[in-house]
Structures are given as structure tokens and as C-alpha cells.
Length: 259
Length: 237
Ligand SMILES: Nc1ncnc2c1ncn2[C@@H]1O[C@H](COP(=O)(O)OP(=O)(O)OP(=O)(O)O)[C@@H](O)[C@H]1O
Ligand SMILES: [Mg+2]
Image (tube, rainbow over all chains, first blue to last red; front, side, top):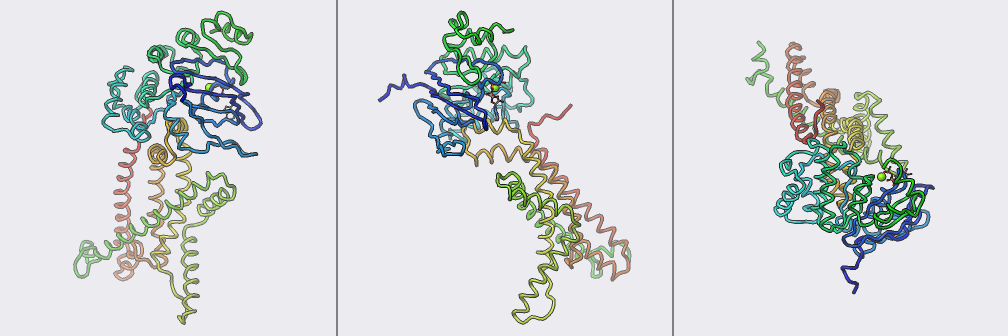
């Protein structure tokens, strides 16, 4: 029996992903252990989003393997065809464990904030509705928008929407949280309130993978930093180390540029 | 005879006749509209298909049926199915022309025409769906049917209902054309009344009022449905 505490929350090995002829990930391996907060940095087009989206199969890799909590996602590889997940039930079960927070929030606009929080717990995880509501209200209070529970997403500021989206992710009891540039769509004065929530999540030991351009946040909060360049990992290590003594020239250039 | 007596429910009044005809108009329009919804959804699904021939068929259908006069479609349906029925009848010894049932042919004709318009409405609604919200639903583990029912359908309704209301109005007006194949709906009943009483103006005026009444009531229904579907959409200031 493998020790559950030592089973990685996410394990990516040799992920390759192409769009048509164009390969955007050239064999990326990455392991996130329980409690890791991994910041993924890189310039635009380096493949950060693609990598994150391979974890929950929003993009199916052309080669390599993805495991969530030790369970490998079974892929079918027929020659001449794009790869597919063999069993969508398995994919959906694992997706529910890897809750994603999007750059553009993507709250369901026809549902109130509270309904957004209980939607997947009730309909995907089949939890009791009353319990889901009670928990959702507690989560909304935690991210500081309890009074908005009956409002629709369009009536919230960007910062409030993103905090609601984080609460929606937490409502899944995820074993890992995936953030794709969660503050990039926000007005500068709203960035702080979202980063604060994420800081608190990191402090309570949640496993998080965060694609971000917030260098200060990556440096202070993450346990590990990964720098992606043209679809390969160019630099990886503890932020204190890599930011002080970058081994790769590209990462050195990247952090000295305006950040 | 004054107007009230003419349209009244007395022994010489045409009230019951006009009322029944109104029911017939609503019935044939509704049946045609529903047939059109089925054809329209199938057409829209085909238009998004990965299979080229399906896309071509859908494109051909909507282009042709929106491009030819509705009256022509009704004649084609009526005489087309009548000749089939007559031919079958001849096999069993019936002689001459046997007319196709007017209600059925009328509803079918309205169905294929309104389906071509509804297909465009559905296609537009699907194209307007917010991709990110659908992606979020997938990312949260929703299987496709659940995603369709809980996210896509309510969102598509927002974009489809106004267009659906317009198509319904078209269908109501188109139903008057069914009078040419003898279905006694508002238009046909008015022609009969006008002919036998020599008071055409009273009948056609009443017919106009009845059509307006139907559009008014159904328009309210559509607005109610739209208000419901638009929950959470912020109106531009
Ligand atoms: N669906 C797609 N079809 C074709 N090419 C794509 C698709 N998605 C991404 N790409 C390409 O893959 C490359 C990596 O894209 P990706 O979105 O992962 O970059 P990123 O590092 O997240 O960039 P950004 O910082 O701009 O978000 C880019 O060249 C992009 O154009
Ligand atoms: Mg990206």
C-alpha cells in the first residue's frame, strides 16, 4: 500500500500537447505534493494555461500521463487521431477533485452567487442541498461577500466575482486547486482582496497550482516556483533560491523585466 | 342586422363559428410551431455537426424554405400529399382526386417553414453562449447531459426567446394562408361569413381584432418567459 500522505496530489509526467502541427508542451513533468503551493510563471504563449488545463483534461495531452491523488487518467491513443480520455466518468470524478479558478471568473450568470456555490456540490457530488447551502454561506462569509449571496454575478465587482469563484472551488472540497491568472482580469485596486484570500488558503496548507504574473505573490506565498518557456520547464525550485540565483538566463531576463 | 347581432351567439349570429375558427387558428399555428421547433433544433444540431453532409443539408433546408413563398409551400404540401393519397386510394378502387386532410397538411407546411426560421434562432442562441461558463461546468465535473440541462438550456433560452416570439408572430399570420386548402380557421370563416351575409367589412374587421388578441396574449406570455430567462443579466445603462 502506498502511503496516502506521500501520494502526490498531482503528478504530470512527460506531458506533450500539440495544436495541429504546433507542439506547445514538449514533455513537461511536474509533481505537486500535498500542501505544495506551486507558482507557474512564464511569458505569454509559453504554455502555462495549456499545462494547467491538461491536469483536468480541459485539454487532452498527446502524450504523457496525468495522475490525481495517485489515480492515473486513462487515455486512448489511436494512431492518426487526437487522444481521448477513455472513461468520461473517471475524468468527471477527478475534475471534481481539482477545482479550477479562471482568469475571467466564469461564474454561471443565470444563477445567484449562492446557487453558483451549490450547483456542482448538489448536482455533481450529489450532496444534500441543505448542507451544501449552509456550507456555501459559511464560505461566502469567509471570502467576505456573505451579503451578496442572492445577487447575480453581473452585479458584483470583478474582485467580488473572483472571490465568489474561489468559494465555488472550495465548496467542492477539492484536493488541489488550479488557478489560471486569477487576478489578471482585475482592476489594480481589486487585486489585493483576491490575493489575500489566496494567501489565507496557502497558509492553511492547501495544495495549489497558480499561474500568475504577480511576482511578489509568487515569491512570498509559493513553496515552489516553476518557470515555463516555450513549452519546457526552464527553472524550478524554492522561490527564495530561484529568484535570488536564477540558473537560467531566460528566467533572469524574465524577472528583471518590469516585474 | 347590426354588428353585435351579427357576431353574437344568437340563432343568426356568427359568434360560435368565429370562436371555433379562432380555436382552429391557434391549434394549427401551435402544432406547426411545435413541429418547427423540432425541425429547427434538429437543423441547428446538424448545422453544428462535424459531418459535412449534415451541415450542407441544414444549410440547404433553411435557405430554400426561407427563400420561397409560404403559399407555395402550402400548395406543394397539399397537392403533393393529395396526389399520393389519390394514388393510394386508386389502388383500393377510389376514383378521382382525394384531398389531403387540411389540418395535418397545414400544420406540416407551417412546421417546415417555421422550422427554417427557428433553426436560425437556435443557431444564433448557441453561438451566443458564454464559452467560459460552459468550460467551468466541464471543469467542475458535469457530465454532458447535466451540463446541457443546467447550464446550456437556461442560457440558450435567454438568447432564443425573443427570436422565438418573432417566429410565433410569423406563424400566426402564416396560418391565414391555410385557408386556401379549406381549413376553417379565422380567415376562412370570415370569407364564408362575408360571402353569405354580404357584410365583408364586419367579418374582416373582426378577424383582424381576433388576430391582434392572439398576438397580444401570446406576446405577454413571451415577455414573461423572457423576463424569467433574463434573470441575472445586467441591462446596459
Ligand atoms: N485551442 C488552441 N488552439 C490552437 N493553439 C492554441 C490553443 N490554445 C493555445 N494555443 C497556443 O498554444 C500556445 C500556448 O498557449 P497558452 O494559452 O498555454 O499560453 P499561456 O502561457 O497561458 O499564455 P498567456 O500568458 O497569454 O495566458 C500559444 O502559442 C497559443 O497560441
Ligand atoms: Mg494563459
